[in-house]
Image (cartoon, rainbow, N blue to C red; front, side):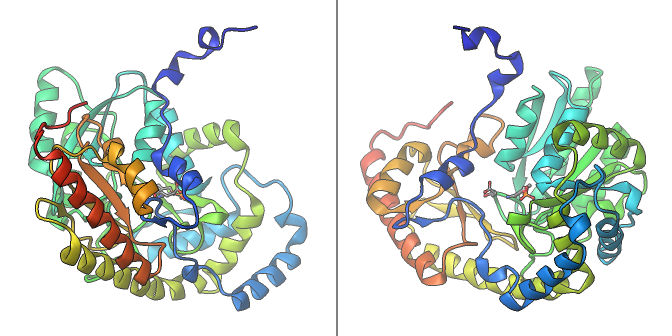
Length: 412
Ligand code: PMP
Ligand code: G9A
């Protein structure tokens, strides 16, 4: 018998499971889940829409069920180029590549850019599945903390300066500047401008991951970094998962042609092409305004759910717990007292209180975050959100009583 550990590639040693994906499998019907950022099915196409969509699919049957080109369905890229121009992103169809979910785009960027020990800058905290994708290529992370205006750019500047002294610079900076996962925070316009200046001064790429850019609640949509970019430094990644349907697995990357050339090469090897069938569905939805019409409805649904969660947190959470006030998106990030380990607490909360959340540690590249949790308000109905927060608060109150006497900060 082959000894598996003798034959596995060295790159597997930093592969870690996604807690979001693990929880998705574990959660039973009687659990109120604040774990995965699953869209509310009310935001999916209606039965009426589906009739039209499938009538259209029937009319393009020969192509829809066929292999497609690696770059993506040309009709979809044309429509996408128009859709992007409405958020001030100028992208020729040749600068767009359709991916199987934006997760694939994130992974492909890791593939084409990261050598072992290359420096990749990320927010602390950041999207855990981006860390999971990049880990495969063994970068050294430079984590930059956030405040209520997003990544602290002064700190980034300080770190870049110190890297330069050592003759080093990042390969790229990965950011979710708008309605961030996991905090719901948006980077201020001033910081966006400064970030672009720094990227130019220190000469690195920015990867802007933007699944939630349309899901803003109280203000207008913020200018995308890509829309402000004059030098082709921003590689824009986005998806139809949160504004139409994640089941279609349609995402996209926008970058200069020299970059897309390499992305296409990596996608050829990964999956040849994204499904023509779901690309045609997305094309139809874009062309006929289904997605544009859906956005105000989506905002309304999630805003109301955010409010339900924030109000319940205010009412039930004990002293010593802090949380973000999301300006959009699907998530609230929460800090418990430092002596509580949210990963250990999860199993009790799941089994006894029947509530799920994502322990926050995996969103941190610096080994911190043991006392944090991410709560998603996107999926459960509002009465369940309130009940779930009531139960979770009871569990947290129990944990504070039980562990505060130890008062030992959790460390990695
Ligand atoms: N990036 C971020 C920041 C996300 O939150 C998500 C989904 N939660 C993704 C990428 C991946 O989304 P998808 O593959 O469904 O497009
Ligand atoms: O189910 C997934 O993995 C997508 C959701 C991502 C998230 O919860 O951040």
